[in-house]
Picture 1 (tube, rainbow, N blue to C red):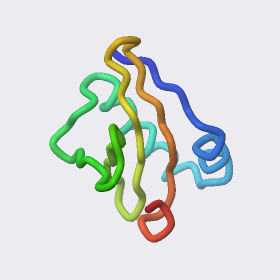
Picture 2 (cartoon, rainbow, N blue to C red; picture 1 turned 90 degrees about the vertical axis):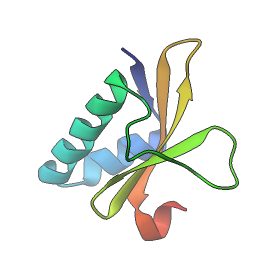
Picture 3 (spheres, helix red, strand yellow; picture 1 turned 135 degrees about the vertical axis):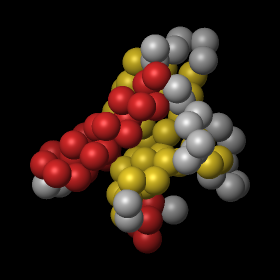
Length: 83
């Protein structure tokens, strides 16, 4: 199982978002903790080691550090703003 570390942007987004969406995002993040590369995962083009997973109209951008068993949540936002 991987540990999760959130960027400041991700923390701020989760604080200001409604509870239903936050629950959906946390459910997806919990799935990523068990297996960081689920079938919905795609590599972000033009980046090295950055992946994205979809939650409705929102995207979670994250990095995986296998050496330290760590997932770094880089950014969470709507699709139009995240890229």
